[in-house]
Length: 310
Image (tube, rainbow, N blue to C red; front, side, top):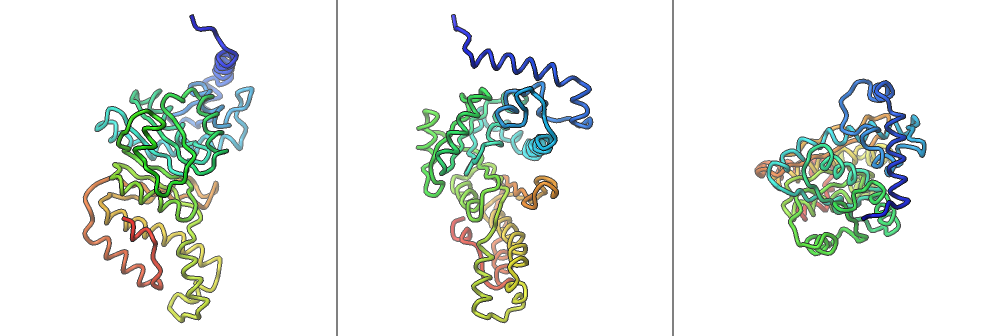
């Protein structure tokens, strides 16, 4: 007979406290009547692991904003995940540059508790301290069976071997995610997803600086191009580069055989880095590569290194 541990007692007591606190009236006030995938009384251990519920099971205003954001993320990705559920008895996802693993744990919990489908997630990040924190959170959320982590650089990773090391079998990965991966890290995730022919690639880019660096070099050389006035102003250069980088990524993904949508990820008052690029494997768009080349030529000739990788 299994003896109840201190951890078990805490989980039981915290779950009871959350269910007592989050009455229907409080839940309605929190959700404003919206149908959300995650509710505090139903996912208390997960929300505590993510730092959204306090020790007394309450949720302060700053955490409320994050809570609504993560529910929005699930709503955006669920249609694509539903298609994967129809094709694969076990869905396997890679969270590339997983950071603190919000999405990793969210999707694993929803798959088990909402969708009734086994979903395994591997999170990879080069920061070993972050990986240890992710493992702690995963244990707290009681998801360690289906969520694993590896401290490693994403570049050159042998994904099947890494999957075997963490889950015990070499398996095909069906989806690649990267949320707020900085600069070219989003391109690394895209390139990996294309290389393994992932059914789904989803990235929310951050700090897109590759184009801005190229334009800065053009400005330093005194290039008199039509965009010269933009290249010379650091703020405008960064802002324009951010949107054009994502437009180029969309075109390269379409050329590589994906149906792509760029959409608002979260509302702008939370962060300006609020674009989600969601790509579902389809047929190559025969004109997309030419569109990419035309866009590069029209904006000074600086493209993305991603173009040579997909």
